[in-house]
Length: 161
Image (tube, rainbow, N blue to C red; front, side):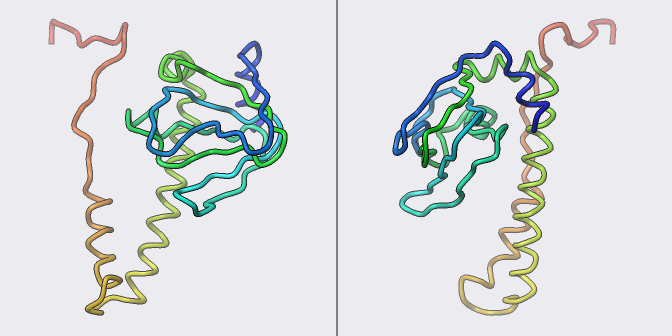
């Protein structure tokens, strides 16, 4: 994760006391955080999903990339220091290495979730209960495509074509 931290040189850095909420589930902040020091917990509702203490960990990316509210709350579990990018979309557009890193990270998460769902499908296929519908969930994930795509500045389509 050192390379992601190298891209944070000169960025705003903020310290948080234990218990401080950095991102709130259901809200939209437009911010992206990169962990410099400390530990944060990721919560969905009242359930702790993860405890993260690896410098270079990124938070808020899903909300920024999907232009949707945060899917989880991120709270400092210890004294924590993060790099803060208030306009995360602009930061990602101007740092393709970070954007590519996030793409790989999200692809790894999707692969892990899909692998888990496939395992569940094998175990519970044919059952009449809610676990029997895992196959439908997999189909939806696999075939979901986002139609909207726009070229970035300087990459407009050639009008001669």
